[in-house]
Every structure is written in C-alpha cells, then in structure tokens.
Image (cartoon, rainbow over all chains, first blue to last red):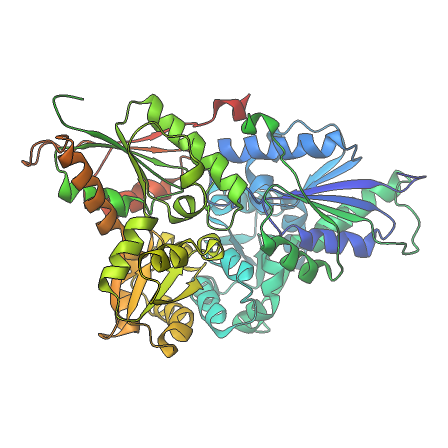
Length: 270
Length: 270
C-alpha cells in the first residue's frame, strides 16, 4: 500500500458482495480492494448463527493477515448474525446499518424488506429500521430462490419475474412504499424488482449506502486516496474454485480481476 | 447393534439423501440407520472436486467413529467426485453406479440425465452408463434451481413445472426415452417431472436401485436382519441446526426421527 491509499477488505459468502465492491470502486477509485468469497461454504443464508459467526471470523482473520486497514462485511446474513460478535481490529462495517439508514431516509410510512431466510429470521433489519424511526411500519419476506436465480444467470427473465411477483405479493398488498434489498445479490435483480413493484415503490440497496459510509470515514481520516482513477487494483479470493465465480464476478464488476483459490482455514484440511 | 441387524451410515450434503433412507427403510425394516446431512456446507453441487472430497471424508470419518457396518454416499455430487478416493473401511456404495445400472436396464436408445452442475461437469453418469452399454446415447443437463425449489417446498407448483420444462426442453427435443434423476432431491419432483416428460419417458431414480444393492449385499452376508418391522431406528445428524432440515426430513421419511446438531470437524472450530 503506497501513500494514503487504503487497502479495503470485503467478504461475502459468494459473489453477491461484489455489488459493494463495484460501488466502492466508483467512490474510492484509488483504493485497493481484497475481496473474499467463501464459496466453499455458501450459502450463509440458510445456516445458523453459530455457523455463520464461525465462518465470518475465519474470513476476517484471513483479510486481517493480509493487512487490510478497513473491512466490509458485504453479506447481509453475516452482518445480521455475526457482525457484533466478530473480533476485528480495523474500522469495519456491515451492510445492515447503512441499508437501514438508506431505507429510513427514503421511506414514507411502510418499508418492505426482502432477504435470505436467516436474515429475515434474525429480524435485524426490522430492529435497525425501528431504532432509527419507531414510527415506520416494517414488513419482511424471505426470498430463498432469488440468489440461485441470479447465480443461474436468469436475472432478467420472465420466470424470475413471476417468482419475484409471488414473493412480493403480500408486501405490495400491504402497500409498502419502499423496498429494501436486504441481500447483496439483489441489486442484480433491480430491473425485475422495479417492474414488479411499479413506480410507487422506491428501491433501496445497501451496496450504495455502505460504500458511502466507508468513503466518509476514510476521507475524514485522510485515507481516501487520490480521486483520479488508476490501474484497477481489485484482487479476488474464493474458498472454492468453481467456474461460476469468475463468470459472475466480471459481470458484476464490469472489469476483469485476478482470482485466486485459497483455504481460509488450514486446520480444516489437516 | 444387536444380533444380525446392521447399522447403516448414510450421508448427503443436505436432506435429499433421505430419499435413499426412505427406500432402505422399505427394504431393510430391521436395519438401524444413521443419517448425516452436511447442511453447514451444502450445497456440494456447485463446489470443486477437492472441496467435495474433503467434506465427504469428514462425513465418512464421523459415521465410522459411530461404528456403522455399511455406508452409503447418498449424494450424487460426492458419489461422482469423491467416492473412489474416500478412505472407507466397510462395504460402501455411491448412488451413481446403481442409478446408472437402473437407467441402462430401463433405456431404449437415449438416456437423459439431470443433475447438479458439478455432477454434470464430472460426466460421471455418462461414463458409467456408457461402460455398461456403449451403444446408448446419453445427454446431460445441469438443473441448479431444482434443489432450492424443493427446499422452498415448491415441489408441486406451476412455477417449478415451467422451470423443469425449460431445463428438459433440449432433452425432450432430442427424444430421450429414459430420464435418470441424478440428484437425491429429485425424486421429490417426480410428479412434475412425469407431467413434463409425458408417458413416453421412463423416470429412473438412484434411491430405489441403491437400496436394492445394499439389501442384496447385506442379505448375502447374512446381515439383512429380520423382515418384520420393528420400532423405527433412524437417527439424524446435521452439521447446521437450521429449522428447514427437520421439516423436510419428516416429509421425506413419512415418520419423525430424532435430529441432533453435530460438528463433523472439531478442528474447524478451534
């Protein structure tokens, strides 16, 4: 790391957190980013708190060993279930609080939240939104098929639109005015979500608001780096060497980035 | 274990392998069964060979420590990618060879195989079928959304039927006469698959043929146990304590069974 250019570590269970990396690249073009996708153990969204915490700590340790000076938990499940119990030595963010703040700023009276099963079960978004504005009504809906649909590459597809319509029906009937996309994969479904919701519902995602929070903090600390774009400096790590990851990563980032297979937990292999 | 009643260990990445347990319960009602679902690390179907082998060996070790005298790898991905490299001390079976044999027995000229991405990539079914009958034509199709659809409980649903129709279209256009369900979750989609395929296509699953192979071997060794049903003796273990597992397990087994949360790899937690 040279001068004041920060090294930011980002992890997610898979490829979805790259939507946060794409947003960070826009806001902090001089920052270097190490991204870890724990693809060997994804998805986190159907797993227990204990398991998600154990996996998340291993990811944090991996990134800290590589000297990151800021860390983003770009996985909603891990943000909801593990963030407060993680042992992290640098400034760090989940995607939950920034997402909740953005939803509160956009909301009229009723916020809908869509997320994975575990995130919904934790009710973490509901609590975060109500802490910021206890007047708001919050309705949640678990949408476990949306991540596999994105990973299948069916983001803009009429079957996906019908599944989204089914998931959202109770929220739309209850007249939500804002929809918080509580999973980092979901920004890739923005087109379908907007069509199903219609113009009366504002879509909010955490990728944008999280990257804004990181930018503010780093610039305040004089660590924002230059504003001029320089050579791309995103490095990707995945715990499993599937071919999907590279394919989806380039689609999300809009640029190629070197990808390396790593084992975050050597103990597991012995 | 008392007398000649065998203790059979069965593992899968999740709940799908219980279709094999249900078939074993029919054929060997006096056998005791230990079932391990590696739900903390599912799905295997999108992961690499190295990772699948590592996870599978941990599952085998767990079941062997509990004294099983026969072992079934009831996960098609693990059967395809890991079976031959596993260190197992008891008679053991994957679901691949039995499934391939059943398909060859049922086939006319052209067998379609549906499976997860990893199983299809390994081409293991194609090779197993061609070893048994080199004349047969074999066409494969990866169907990554079918497992999440089953886990969502949408087994008999018109959206699932449309997704199945899309996946099967190239196979049906190529006039398959037999369809091998190359994933232990898929027998739960039998109704939808039969409607999409129509009467001209025979559906074959490995659960049935695998349980037959186990029965033959155990009876030959005088270890088939009595034929009279006795009190249910299935014990379930899962590596993650999600609530889904219990719900789906009872639906597949048609009987309740005690479920315990375990960690197959203590090393990982230290």
